Amino acid sequence: CLTEENYNAYTDVPLTYYYYDFIDEYSTLNAKADDSDLEPVVHGYPGQVFRPTWATTRAEAVKMLAHSMCAYDLYEALGGNIDDLPGITPFSDVPTSLWAHDKVAVFHELGIIQGYDVDENGDEVDGDITFRPHDYVTRGEFVKMLMQAFLLWNPNIDFDPDTYTVETEYETFADISGFEWVAPWAQFGNDMGIFLGYASGDAKPNQDIIRAEALTILHNAGVVLSESEDSLFNEYYGN
Image (cartoon, rainbow, N blue to C red; front, side):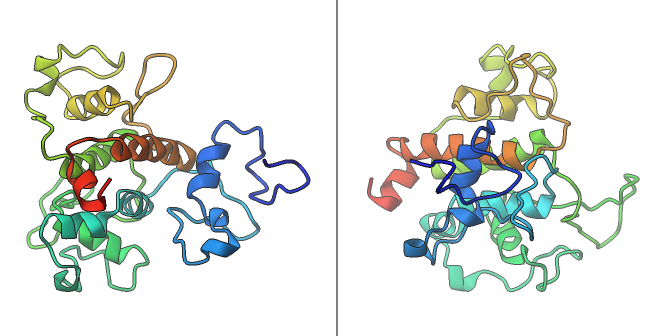
């Protein structure tokens, strides 16, 4: 049991902080001495701070998602060979020197991210596909990527984003119309107990997701995934 005497974590994440457990579970300082080879889902910053309310970049989000959803194992479970993954991505702004390069590469191979072929003004850029790794990711974008990975681990789940909100008579989040692109992903995430939204009934899909919220959603996904029956995840890990 953690007490004030043995508490040794981020100075900006007190024991009483709402998101404390999720940050402790997935962050750098969770790697104990006897698990020194454990790669954290997310790292803190110099000075022993976590910055829980900072917005999450697209590169950070993919790194969190790829690690927590076991992307390399997923790739192999689907018949791929990690050794055959391309050494580069098709994105002109994701060089091999980018710290998140490998995670971006495997998520692209899984079909979860495709990048942009237009500039920030919406004008088509011929022959140039970008990922925009340093842009912030919204809550809606995050849950879509997460639920895409979740579906790959659960191929028996019947989900069609084009019809899901009609079939389920969408009325989950007050601030999302059933006709918006994010609606099926948000509702599917909510139906699975992963993307719960706010007490107000809003999902705030266009709001940048903060680091602490991202870890909370990933925790929920991990719990649901580990309990999934008749899934590729269950088959691969022999649960």
